[in-house]
Amino acid sequence: MSLVVERKDYHSASFAYLKGQDVTMPEQAITLRDRDLILTEPGIFFRVYGYWHPPEGYVCDPEYVPMSIFKSDTLLDRRIRKKGYCKFYGPEGVEFVNEKYPKFTVQYPPLDTILVGVRHPDISEVLRTDMGLKEMLASPPDDLLAELLVELIDYLVQNTSLSRSDLGIFGSLLAGIYHPQYSDLDITVYGKKTFEELRPLLLEWYSEPDGYLANEFVVEVEQFLEKPSPFKAITREEIIAHHRRKGIYGILPGVREPFLKVEFEPIRRFDEIDNLAEDATMTPGDRITVRARITEHDDGYYMPSEYGIETLEVLDGDPSASPTRVLNYIEQFRMMAFRDEEVLVSGVLEKVERKSTEYEQIAISYVSGWEANVLKTIGAVEY
Image (cartoon, rainbow, N blue to C red; front, side, top):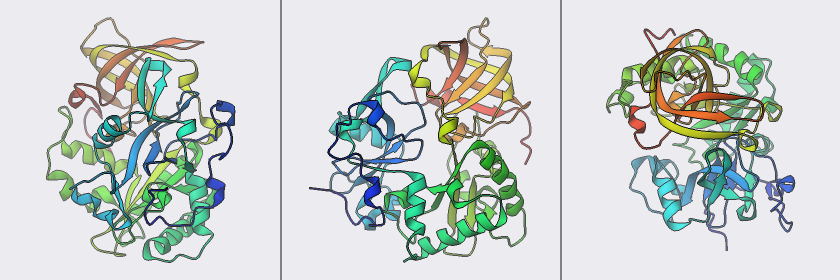
């Protein structure tokens, strides 16, 4: 018996995950990527996390859960509650799954550890971000949010060289459990070149007085200043300054109260994916803090985000270390710096061994002591 409550029915049978077939072999698995959703038998939606997955399944974050099996007093759940679902916030999804549904784990070879995830046999249905948009656009919109989605997609297509196939949807829109009055418009953008065309246009549109789109971190900043930064080495003001120039966080002014958020999520095209889980071994060491220069930034668009760095100075940790990469798993620290900018980086030093190379990297994640992690530019942030 399905525990899915009041889901939109626009998802077609094309999403069925190889039902009736043996899905234990990886060659029979549908290829998924970051922000795709996996629906499991308890009714839990898992967000596929990133692009590096073991043969047995997918590394995931628990995203949405039926209120029949999970209760939350979080006020933010008002956006989805009327659809019978709660959204997990912070670590509560991982904690809930570990306690109630421990089968949702996968072995992750690069770290020789077990992570939250979904094995192929436990997948009931998959919702791909690209297919989700096609399905929504195939039918006339039947509520305000769906109407605004169509308008936004048309605006992007008409004012750029992007086509509808360059775009998708994620989050509650993709799951079909969105709330027309409270949910956001979450848009995926496929491919590095596509995103690099769109980002400067978004920043340009944000700067236009009374424009169609506005920068969330220019217009609405008070709510972010009310609470202290969760990280020790970066202030709320610094986070806002970095987010402001990313270009991915917008709002549609005047369409509903108080405002409608729009997020543009860069997603790798399938031919841009290099599955690190297939041949990499990462051996964690001690914490390290360095001053560095960014040598490569364009893999910093994605989650997990990667940066090439030149270590200029070890401020704390092994003085003989010379990491050349940053691997970041924390949302706030993606797209934080660009080529030739000088940065402060703090995380865990790891030795990475791949078939053709070895190097040191700094890993930034929610492990013990995560509050000390940071990736930020040194000096003023240019916008």
